[in-house]
Image (cartoon, rainbow, N blue to C red):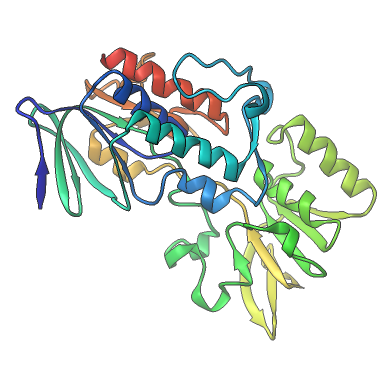
Length: 332
């Protein structure tokens, strides 16, 4: 195993190459900090995997007013870019700032030691004064409870017919599609599919409630009113089997219906086990979250910060970017 260490340790190791992690990397590079960004996939992997083709990355999501204090800025015409263009801009920021990054590297542990922390991957270890955890929750997307042990979250025999994301919804046409989930991602998929397909949405709650943005909620209600979208509220998917070329999906244990495609859009999961191994205490109900100071430093681990999705940022990319700026300023 290769060991990366300065005489007094690197200044900061950043785990995760999404908007928050890249922002921290750009700021660290600009300030001359010895740093590295470790990303288990590619830069902006979540956007690559889970953003449908041409879906815009919007800076004022859910009414958040975009305010940028650091180097990475998406203002004016850049405040709403298709995902592909947003990723291109992010790559340019990384290149222009000479961000030190390794892609395809998964961090296995973060432990106290050395100058502050020892960060271990499958092929290297890093001695760092500070660590920033900028992990997203989509590194491990939620799936049906009965599929949680499956590789990629889908049983092999069902792959292709059951998916966790639709990269190109516009290419799906003339099918019976069931979407599982009641959040914005689920509803946005339904809205893009329902003009060319027979679309139903299964959601365990009695209605959409407050989970949706006002725009998505209004659009979904309008589609239901015109008969373009069928809502199956108060339902849970309890079984999925092959039925010839189709899927037999059982709702609530007894109601079996056939579909051509099943799209499971439950969001992501907080990596509680990994956080616990890092020494980060999590608390709260129903969803446990890291216990952090106002500076986003762990309440129990001096010098270890948590930003992005794990710090409570929900889809607000501008907030994640600003967190990267704040933490590097605090370190500096």
